[in-house]
Length: 208
Image (cartoon, rainbow, N blue to C red; front, side, top):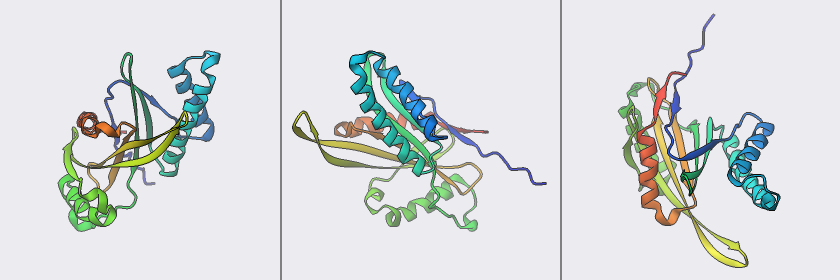
């Protein structure tokens, strides 16, 4: 009988207050989003509408994560005590990448092949591609800013959302994991990219 080999998992050392959403079932998602909304806004009746809006926002993020077969979804609400921060982290395996057996399993070789494929996979993002470090190896980062027009209290404004994607080579394999950070603070993208880079720099693979 063949015994399945446990795959290493990507572990983060987070800065600030982060909440994990359990993606195992719709009921688990509902329970997680309720706990987070209550933890952030409290139980006061006058904040019920705000809690409902927050749960709806988190549920949308969870739905997108489930559709991408995500392994992890984290929501950040504070950078430090009394310092609000809005960011999400989603981790999933990039099933679209299939490496040739000839390249081996070295991290640099896997990333080099990936970088060559980026212009075809993501023509816009390829121009932003840079190498960054995690605890184990290099990773490849691309980013983009999505602009949408929002309406709040009858006023129209442009929302700029920063999306930063980091591709990690899984040790001893030709597989890639993708960590995606998103934040509505796209107006200060340079600062947020440095922040996300710092989180990635402290991340590492551990045996499952």
